[in-house]
Amino acid sequence: MTSTASVHTAPATPSPARRPSDRFAGWAAVLAGVFSIVMGTSQLLFPQDEDPAIDPRTRVLLVLFTLILWSLVVVHFALVRRAGSRWPAWVASAGTVLLTIGTITSAANGIDLEFFPVVAMAANALWFIGSIALTVSLLRARRLRAALAWPLPLVPVLSIFGSQLGGGIPAGAFLLLLAVLLLRANADRPVR
Image (cartoon, rainbow, N blue to C red; front, side):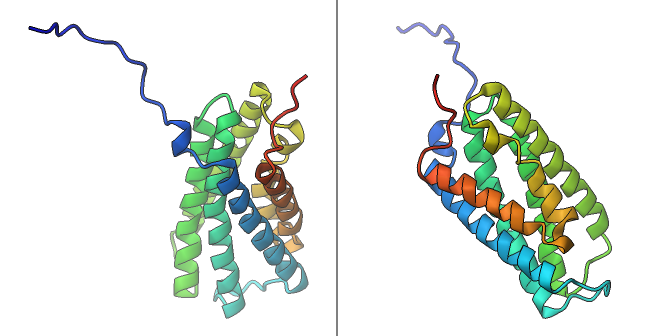
């Protein structure tokens, strides 16, 4: 007869295999960076008017923005490997995914639906707060170059509030820099 003594195991945590690899996150950041620059350039050259109806060009921009937001989820969870805690990536990613509800429904219907302002405010707050918390966690863990951590909260600010002024251009440039370093496995803080 075998003993049925209980064995204490550590709480289940996602294995590194479940998190996106740096290579996958790097390509996601390339996609987000390129699309962000395209959006920023388009919005800078052809500012949108205040008409609530969404024209075909704006529908395309909403689809691009949706792809950027989903790509950022991959980037957030790849950065978690270097952070002190996981919850900031969950919060930031919850904001980006929630925001896609608004972008997809607006693109599909040709107009922002009534619930969009409430969803957008909550989503933007989650994305921004999660980005700040992820930055703090990354800086405390000291496993990512500080120059890559500091700009993270600027991505939502430039993408949302600076969008009509071409904010997607610097946000995209940062994402491309992050992509290059992730793809080259050169994002980690140098060991001293």
